[in-house]
Image (tube, rainbow, N blue to C red; front, side, top):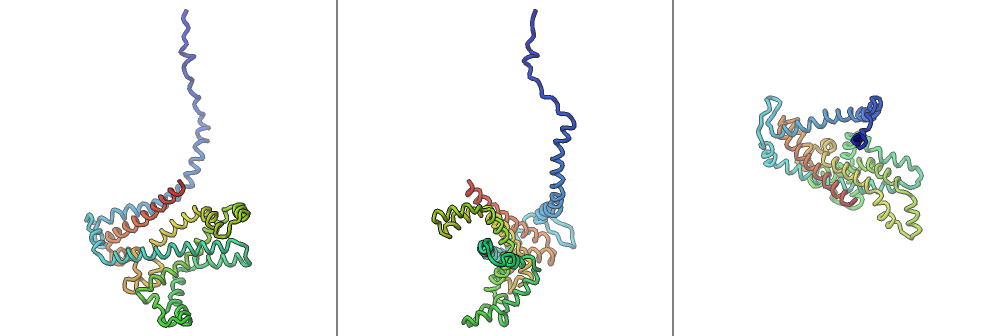
Length: 311
């Protein structure tokens, strides 16, 4: 008599899950998709599809009065030969180089000042945040009045200090961009101050108390505790501020309209003028592609530097 051992050695399969269990496991996935889907649809319709269309349009010649025609790299050649493009590229870089460090430094200083116990703390926080929610047109008009070369309070104050020939500000090709940067920093610093305040309040007070017990002075506490604790917030602020700086458009259009001459013309304004005013959609898309690559390149570099620091 032979005894078969195969059934005993055969591995038993796990039982198939019951249908109600599968439905229960799909429910969290469907709930998650229900939250993501509206945002994704908005992103796809308003951002992703226009980006892909703009990329294709940069290789076409298309005006409102004709059909699109494939022209290859002709739009990019026209862009490179256009002197206004290089001036706008320089002005955009100039604006970003002034706006990003000034905004971050002043925002961090305000956050450090308003992160301690002060009388009227809520009032000062609100007052510094208020310019960010104020109409940008109103901000530009007020700063144009302040920077008026003859009757503006800024130049009158400089004359009181003994400056005999104060700057012409928005009417000067040399001082127009610094005037725009000052107005932009004043408007944006309240928003980034709030982000830095949120970051400061996540740093445990026990670290500062232990540093005081060890005899660390204020600068040592700031350098060794505050700055490392703010590293994620600083990275986020840097990325947001960089993207906003390269996309600047409305403040410059209202304050100077790119002038005097082409002293404050930036890439976003050139895209608007070529695409909307002149109807050269292909050339405007080519400039848009350059601006996109510029912003994406700076953002990727910042991510790589941040990853190396965290490694």
